[in-house]
Structures are given as structure tokens and as C-alpha cells.
Amino acid sequence: MAAPLFLLAPPRSYTSLMNAMLGQHPQCFGLPELCLFNVERLVDLWVRSTDEMGSEAKTRHGLLRAVAEIYGGEQTMDSVRMASHWCAARQNLSTGEIYRELVDRIDPLIAVEKSPAYTVDIQRLLRIRETFPDARYLHLTRHPVGQCKSVMSLYDGTFALFVNSIDFLEDRAIVEPQFAWYDLNINILNFLDTIPAERQMRIRGEDVMNDPPKFLGMICRWLGIRDDADALEEMMHPERSPFACFGPLDALFGNDPNFLSGPTFRPHKVKVPPLDRPVPWREDGQGLKPEVVELAREFGY
Image (cartoon, rainbow, N blue to C red):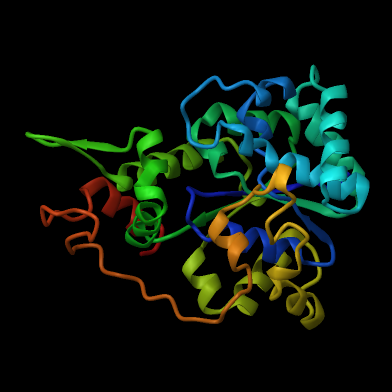
């Protein structure tokens, strides 16, 4: 069984695009957000036990779409219904057992997945390690200003609110996404401290956006898979992924809606802003917190 690759990053860190690009490599299979390791047993994915964003029914859309595609070869309302029965028959299995079954099914292709929700709780990351002791991890970073602006543009920063990324001022409390950027990256770093160095890589998302062939080739060589021109060309077309679009009505999502609306990679240069300026989502003129600046510099910003 080919060891899977997990992309670890807070949401809005180029994860959807990167997952689809890597998944288009001829030796890989890019999965939607399965969210399996959010819980211990499959049945728990059908039970709302927290107020965390994504704990409603659409959290299951990625899994249903993946099962429909892998076992049915298509994503229709009928194949999603089949996927629901597939899950019901396995509801008492651990999510690790379910994940291994999917990976076995697509072997010898390398499963590639990113579920940003995994980074919210290190226990979720430890479930990955327990299930796949030989898995590889790509820590994908994004400049805190760019990532936080993107978080705040999506449903008024709902994700930051649900992970308690809040700054308590003297007269009010405000959503402050940089706390989530910091906390989730710290979770990733603490987890990766338990993983051998050869099975992890850190890469700046901005670098990949600015020069995809160079950095995608670097990732391929680290994984030990093809890095020839044909393989790189396939990776430049994330829109060809079977999951790079909205699904049928009973499983619409499984990924960032913005990505699903426009999955094509458009060459562009990403400008990296300074770390010592006021941030655009605050009205009080404050900038990044010292600990955020320190960690961003550690990431090469």
C-alpha cells in the first residue's frame, strides 16, 4: 500500500489548489476533504457534537463523493446514495479502518488529502500517525496577512470565530484571525516534532504559486515520484480533478466553495506584504502580534 500524503495547513493557505495539483500527478490520487480523522468512529461523523464550523452535514460530502468516485466511477445522486449505504454498512468501524480501505482501493496511487480541520486538534493528527505510521506530511505555509485576509473574506471570518480566535479589547471583543493562524501552525509544528525529518517537508504556498514547475518538481523528488515535463504538465491542471467542481445535490461540497467555483490555476505573482504594518481587518491600526511575527519569520517571511 502506497503511504498517503497529508497537506497540513490552516484553511485558506492554498491547500485546495495544492491538493488538486498534486492529486493530478499520474502517480497520485487527490481526495476531497474527508474529515475522517475529526472523529474516532465513522458513525460519529453523522453526529453533531461540537459547534465547530463544518460539523454539519456538509462535513460528510467529501467522504461521500470520494466513495462514489472510487467505487462507482462517477458522482451522481445514485452513486452518492450507494456511498451512503457503503458508509452505513461500516458505521461502527474506526475512521482509521475506513481510511485504510480507501487507500487500499486506489493503490498503487498515492492518496493526497488536506482537511484543514485536522489541524484544529493535535489528537486528530495523532490519529493519522496511528493509522499510517509511514505517511508523509507537507506543511504548507502562507503569510499571516494573506491568510487572515482570506479567512475574513469568507463568511465574515466564521472559521476564526469557531476556533475562538478572538481578541478581547477593553470595550468589546473582535474576531482576530491571526490567533488561529498562530495556534494551528503551532499544532502542526508540535505534531511534526514526532515525525521523522525525512517524512516531512515545509513549503511556502507563495513560492509554489510564483514558480509551480520548480516547487512541484521539488515535492515530486521528495516523494520519489516522476518529475518529468509530462507529469508536471498534468499537475498544472487542477481543474481536471473529479473533485474540482460542485458535486450532486446530496453531496455538493467536499472542498472550499471558492475553489469549486474556479479551480483553474492562473499564473500570477504573489506579493508578500511586510510584517510590521497595520493589518487591514482591524480598525484600531494594530498590526501582527509579536509571536505571529516571530513564527512568520521562522517560516521565511
